[in-house]
Image 1: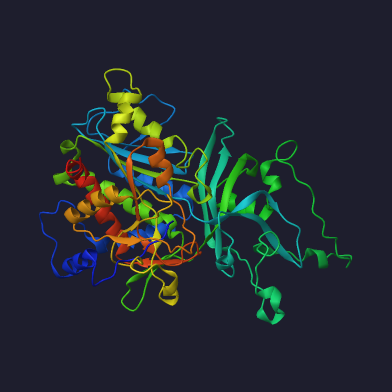
Image 2: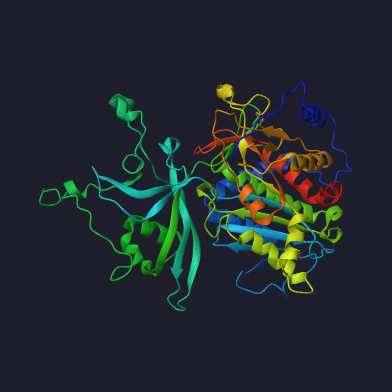
Length: 511
């Protein structure tokens, strides 16, 4: 989620490189040849059908398993489960995932080519007890913003509800996780008509004026006695004499139970649900050169990273048998709120995963010396979306640093350490882009604007590996609905696959 901008066309070697790519077919000698256009529609399906972080991780897990990856459990020892040439992945909390491929010639201490992104997105999550007092016949739902969710772009949108539900099997006593997606318009946050003047203009109180409506209940004025019942809210308790379902809106419980074919709502132990925009992603523009979608930040780079890993290891010319390194993709939750939870990038998830891989192949005990060697030989791409040039606000962008859509990944620079990019890492990724036939853009924020952050600094600091921040540009970051180019998912795959294909070779060019 950082910011990006292109170099001046008349002086930029990146620009001339782009012109060459447009006029000259990609040479067949490129190992990372990618059909960029072919990724647009699959990406649209992915982002439309997987609205929550739990659905996205489950989707990627299924994709990995279908391509021969083995699911590992963090609770098991891995020393007897990993092998040269093997493909594996591990989840944490159902909302983060690390996938990795072990080269057939891998030796402990060798490096890893790592792409890390975040898979969470701005949203509004149901409060623990979301029952609210009915107002004027409207049934409302208590929700809280996750990061910058519930901003004004969420108003007057058709919102569904999805997430994960914990259900107890009454026969075995085991609690299992079930994913649910009520993808028809259930909730809406209504705006106030402009006729009411200043109150309709905002800013809006997220606790009292951004509360979604989910139904109608006029029973208070239709009592047989003709006397309206007082609108009183009854206290609810989690546990004790009350089941979890009793603390939730009854009609929502029934809808969830119906969707999951749950006969006894008392078996619902808990849930984590959120709102999402039900409008599907779609192609747009006169020549359908855009993709309009929700949750772009950052399921876009996450998608391109996983697809790049799959493409790299499935190619006969870049099989793991040729590699002596690790290829790793890490997708993390909670980036939008600081990454400090156990499923976030600031946790031990990625470092301990790499440590366990090294330990499994080490003859002796895996200690600090071997891990330090591994990290010193590794390179990290922190892949997070960047800011494309908005033509209506061109003046707020730094000259020569405003990326365009449908051109390529943008390197993200920041002199104050909000990104990991430096001269060495830029040179290395530029060399990889040359070999892959990819175009790189560049972004840096103006001195009078605030820069965003990524998972890059925390991961590179924890491991000590070389790193760069580079991501695909988008319009309308943190809006409920954003815009990218139709070619952008594939352009991300192209560069990221080139990174996996060429890192080992290019790394030898740098002292």
